[in-house]
Image 1: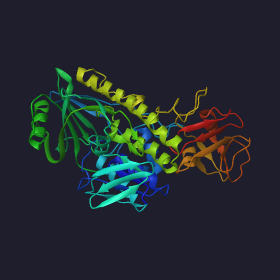
Image 2: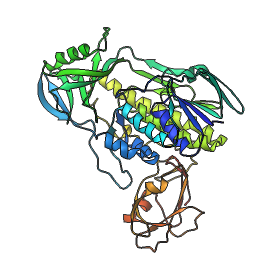
Image 3: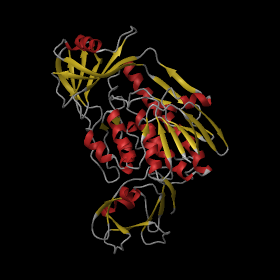
Image 4: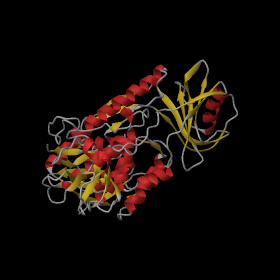
Length: 467
């Protein structure tokens, strides 16, 4: 029988399906919509998500299709008065290969994930809503149009209005902020330099304005404008009139591809699991777009859950909710704090710090992370480092971790379990299964003395350390 049924084919569901399929787990992914979403929506990919995408085999395609962050030109009263960056660009380091975010419209990210999933022989089943389900001690019986399916597990990745969550009666705690509404859309803009984003505002109120951000691979900009309490139609004419108010004219919008009026929902599911049914992504937590956290958090829910479903042990399945719900609560707090800055007109509302890049997310103190001391501990993200193999070929430590398996690293010449990867100091004699620590970065990152062993989970977090 199919082992896992995923309801919802957004970035979360697709990530989970890929991770399961590459492990040889039988998976179906169903989507109630008749057509695939077309629009930018969640277009900011954070550094940790880029690391996940590298492991899943889609990073090169994502980087090629997208673009790095761009500076934003400031237009006040129709005049360009300067430019700003949302975050200072950082250089890669030995332990962080992708320190900056990357921009790609959500629909294009989903397309790349679908192509990767198809390589494992799995297709998204459009126009296939989940109509109902029942579970018992041995599995889940799901009702789809014209069929009943028996599976081991069901995962609701079906968005903020999740049918799965509602059917389970799980509370979705939080608020919908009716005081804030945004007019969003993907539109072409004649007369704007696509090498920049553009911020239009009045000189007397420079922090309240309209932003247009170029979307890679298509001729459109993502348009975002605050709305008052009045009801408006999310039409090309409305976008144009809002822009004209602040720009003084001169920029013609055309070919509106997608638009909506958005209200910030800030909600967290009371539980992420009920027996053999799990929630992930927006079904478990919805975020304001401030900080670019929602899509990224959902992708990492899936990355956390995939190997646990594949192995199926009670200990691992029990760890999903405490690990990911704590992360979601933290990320919601960050997004909400940034939203409040926008509402207050704070000068630093557009700035983004390290806490939005999701590289500092970890599971210290969680059920799979025994207590320890030291700078690096169980539950921490496993750092990258440059290595060389016995033939002198450059290899990144992340390449040793790539794939669905857990990895054991042994530093130095101590005893090693079968299948472990041994890392030796520079200048050591290497066998075919050894790697040289170029520049000492691996030993430093893992606080390693001779004989230290490090067990790294399939999702790239440290599970165990020996002295």
